[in-house]
Length: 178
Image 1 (cartoon, rainbow, N blue to C red):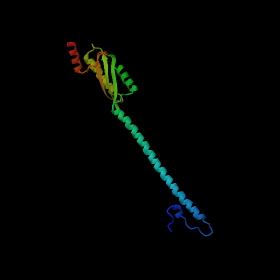
Image 2: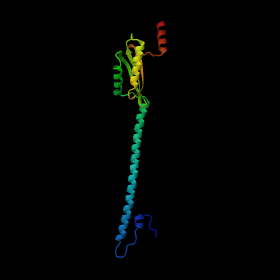
Image 3: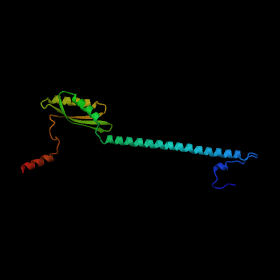
Image 4: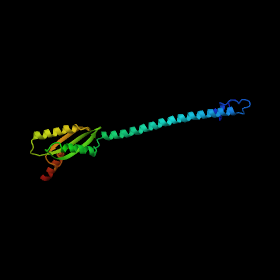
C-alpha cells in the first residue's frame, strides 16, 4: 500500500484515472504537482542566493571601510593636494614669513594634525612674530579638514635638529677634551 521508498511525492499524489480516460487526468495531475514543487524549490533557492550575495557584498564593504579607517587612525600622511593648500595658506599669510622649513600633515582620525616650522627675520620683534604665528595657527585650524595646527618659529633653515639628545653633546665634548 505504501509504495516503494524511491517512489516520488508526485506519484503518490495521483488518483486512479476515471474509466475511459486512459490515465490522461492522472498524468496531468502528476506533472502539475511535480512542476509546482520544482518552482517552489527554485524560488526558495533564488531567495537564499540573493540573501547570500547581499551578505557577501556587505562584508566586502565593511572590510574596505575598516581598512580605510585603520589607516586614518594610525596617522598616515595627508595627500599632496591638502599639503598644497596648507603651504599656500602659510606662504600667503604674512609678508614677514620668509620661508618654510618643515610642513607635516598627518591624519589623527578623519581630520589632520598639521605641524610646521616657519622662518621669520631674526631681527623681527618677538611680539609681532608670536602674533603672526598664532594668527596662522588659527587660520589653518579653520580649514575644513584640519583639527589641530602647530606653528614653530625659526630664524634659519640650515641647522641640525634643535631637540637632539643631550647624550650626543656630552660624547662630543668628551672627544674634544681627550
